[in-house]
Structure formats: C-alpha cells, structure tokens
Length: 154
Image (tube, rainbow, N blue to C red; front, side):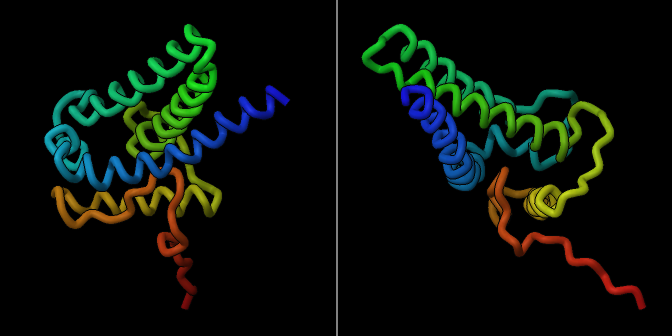
C-alpha cells in the first residue's frame, strides 16, 4: 500500500505541475517575470537564454523537497512531490526544448494527433513576440481547438 501512495503522490504532482506551469507562464513569465522570458519569444544569440533561469528555479524547488523529505522522515512525502516536479521538468524539457524548439538538433516528426495538437498550440503561442496577447499557455495539454484541420483535396 505504501508504494501505491508514493506513486500516487508522484503522478498527482506531475499532473498538478501542468497547472503550475500554465499559471506561471501566464501570470509570471508573461507578467512580472517577462524580463527573463522575453528572449524566448525573440531571436537571440547563443544556446542559452534568460528564460532558462526558470528551469533553475524549478530545479531548486524539486531538489530541495527531495532532500528535505529524505533528511526528515516526518516529511517523507516531500521527496515524492520533488520527484513528481522533476519528472514534469524532464517531460517539459523533452517536449518544449527538444521537440518543439529543437535546441538540440535531431529528427522528429510528429505522427500522433496529440503531438500535432500540442505542438500547434505552442506555435500559436509563439506567433506573438510581446508580453501581452499570447495564447495557449499549456505545455503538455492543449485543447481541441488547436487541432490541425486536414484540408480536403479539390
């Protein structure tokens, strides 16, 4: 039973992080934290961007909860919250930085409708290069409205 609880905490945290990411992106990155996020929406030189500071902030949260939970058995569950945050961060990195933005060059062709939809939502978001007016703040979930419609051949 103990393992089920730990897995549930990790999975629940992973799912919860989509909401945290959405909120952070909409109200922090496109709000008071725009100075760090701005270069992500505009061309810049070099591999790294100020937007990468957000990954550092989330990794500090994740590693701190893992360490604190491990060192303080009374708060054991924090370790599993940290693991959930870490797994979300890995999924985010793979999807956002590798698949969508191709920060490391490799071949990938989206075949599933889900991947096509989530990638399209992200591209719609990046059509706007300013702090205001961008839409589709989700990362691993995108509403059906972002489905790519197939054209009928005439």
